[in-house]
Image 1 (cartoon, rainbow, N blue to C red):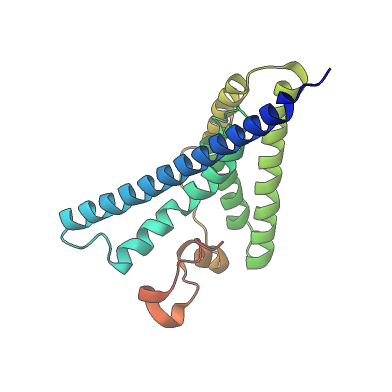
Image 2: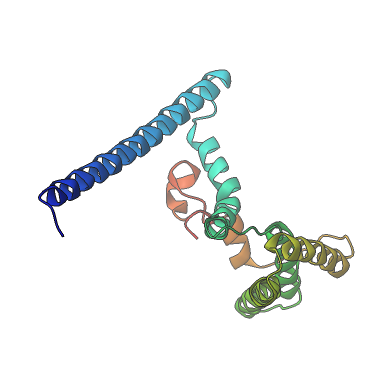
Length: 199
C-alpha cells in the first residue's frame, strides 16, 4: 500500500544524489585546478633555478623529444591499469622489437622496403608477445604480474642474444628523419617540431 510520503522521499533521494554528484564534480575540478597550479609553480621554480634555460624553446623541444616514447608507452599502460592489470614487460619488449627492427633495416639496402619490413616485424613481435602475455591470464586465470614478469625476462634475454651485446648501425634516411628530423625544417629548430612527437 503506497503512502503519500513515498513521492516526497523519492524526490528527496534524487535531490540528495544530485547534490552528491555535484560535489564530486566540484571536487574533481578543484583537484585538476590544484594539479595545474602545482605544475605551473614547479615549472616556474625549475626555470628560476636554471636561470631561465628550462623554458627556452630549444630545451622544451628536447624534453618533448625525450618523452615521446614514454608518452606512447604510458598511453597503452593506462588502459591496462584501468582494467586492474599490470604489464611489466613493456620496456623489454620495446628493446626486443627495436633491435629486431634495426636489424631488419640494416640488412636491406632498399630504404622503403627495409622500413616496411621492419614495421611488419616490430608489429608482429609485439602482437605475438601480447598474445603470450594475455593467453594465460584469460584462459587460466594467472596473475598478469607473473606472466608479464616472465615475458620481461624472456624479451630482455632474446634482445641480448640477437645483438650479442653490440649496437646495430642503421643507414636509413627515412628512419633518421623519424628519429631526428623536424616537421617544419624550413622554420628551423626554433619553431619546427621534432618528427617523433606528432608521430
